[in-house]
Image 1 (cartoon, rainbow, N blue to C red):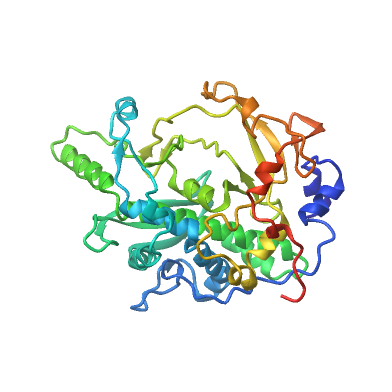
Image 2: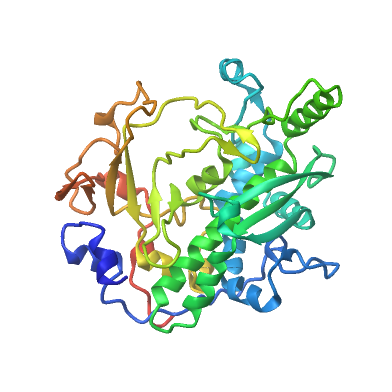
Amino acid sequence: MNPPTRAKFTLKDYSEWERLGYMNLPTLRPNNLAREISPVFRYMDEQDKIRWTRLERKGYQVIEPACRLASAMIESPASLALLHALMYSPRTEITSLSQRAGYPCYTFSRSSASLIPDSEDPRLALKRLAPNINWVLVDPEKIPGCNGVTNTNWVGCNIVENGRNGFQCTIELRKDLVSDLRSLSQQADKAIQTLSSQFYFAVLLCHEVIHAFNKALDPALGIAHRYDVAKRAIRRHPPDFLKYCEPFFEDQPESELGHCWENEVFGGSIIRNKIANEPVLVCKWPNHKGTVVDGCPRPPRRAGHKTTQTRYIIPAHFIHSIQQQAFWDRLDPVDAISFRVQKMTGFRLGLPPGTWKDADWEPSTSSEGNWSVDEESWVCRKEEPDVVKKLYSTANLAATTKWVLELPDPAL
């Protein structure tokens, strides 16, 4: 990270950047994952049909390291548990929310079986999902404000044997993300920027696949579509939004399964403002804005927003380690929190005026509002850049994996 970029983030001192791994970096190895690419991310399907529209084979080679990383992430323990819950957990209607929205809103939860799932079931469903996804690179102007969008094709599919029928999808990604990866891969002095961009792109791929996975098996989507088609057929239904929203996961206040997946796997939502120049961030409490997703209105939230949001800088050591085969070789195959990001240093944002606030949130009992006395983690207020205060408690830190912040071992 260059000095002008570092200057945007006012930290305790420059030693914080060194502790996060963005200064005085050791020699970083490129992504060396040896695993096969999951069928959902492959360039061709089993019938040799190209599944990446507007991307030549040479262009796919640029994103291949990110696809290998995404393949490992989508089959990680926490990811498989969430996929298992999506496949088999019953949907319960949230009556009060349905009344407010004007259409059914559902919630689902992990069962005891989803906590330690039969990993072959979700893996097989992902394999069946693969031919039902079409990847397309598009101009940024086509999906303003988004890096990726999953659109429903309304062609039926089935990814669970004897299970629910859903729909195929087209996933649109900004083509400049691939251009940035290509440019970085040709610059030897951009190792951490390349690894960061590959990490973010891999997260984005998984984020969109989770949306496609749900569309391929959610019965509520089919019901909403049939209702929409019937009303249009009798010409009483002007062009409008589909009356559907993704199911809410457990007690989460917003139905956004892509960020739900990120939260389960990494312990927060992954954020990046610019693909190449700024560090990747993780936000413990995602606050998402926007009014329309895939032609559907944003559903009402189950609760307001917390009054503050802290975005933490993901350490460069983690970005590097997760792209090394040694990381995955020593990963506990049943540990669902094996690579949640340790939240060390971040900056705090307040809600814009007029945003609905969670009246039940008590800052003094939350790590998002209470300044602790721990010496290991720091946060600075964006509106008070010269004031740096301590944030995370020792108990919070103990729950994270210790070795993810180790400097890379040259022997690996």
